[in-house]
Image (cartoon, rainbow, N blue to C red; front, side, top):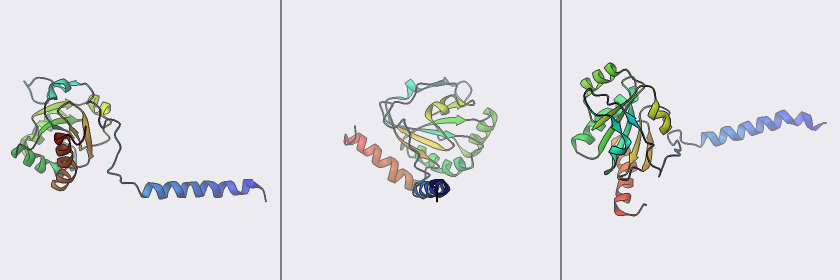
Length: 179
C-alpha cells in the first residue's frame, strides 16, 4: 500500500484535532492586541448636536469605559439598564461609540432608554471601530487614567461581569499592583 492512501486519513485527523482545540476555547475571550497599549488617537463628531467633537486626547485623566453600541444592537439593549445604573452611581465615566448607526435612530434610542454616556462619538463609517479591532456590539474597553486599554469585554456588561472583571482590574491598577 502506498503512502498516498494515508493522506486523506492524515487530513481528517488534523481537522479533528483542530476542532477539538477550538471547542475548548471560550468565544467570549477574544484577544486584543490593544491591551496595555494606548487608545488609538481619534476625533469623531459628537452624536449630540452642538456638542464638541469627541477626541481620544481629551479622555485621559480618569478611568473610563469606551462602550461600542448601536440602536440596531439587541445585546446593547440588554446591557443598557446596567450602564444606566453605573452612571446613576457615578461608578465610572462612560464614553459611547455609536457604531454603524443612523444619527436619528441613535438619538431616538437614547431618548427611549436613557443616556448613560458622558460623551458619545458618532462612528457611522467605522473609522474608530476598525482601529480598535471591534468585531461586534456591544464591546467595551476599560481605559486607565493614562489612556491605556486594560481590558476588553465582548458582549453585554452585567453586574457579575462588572464585579468579577472590571472592579478587580481597576482596584489593582489603583493600588499599584498592576503597572
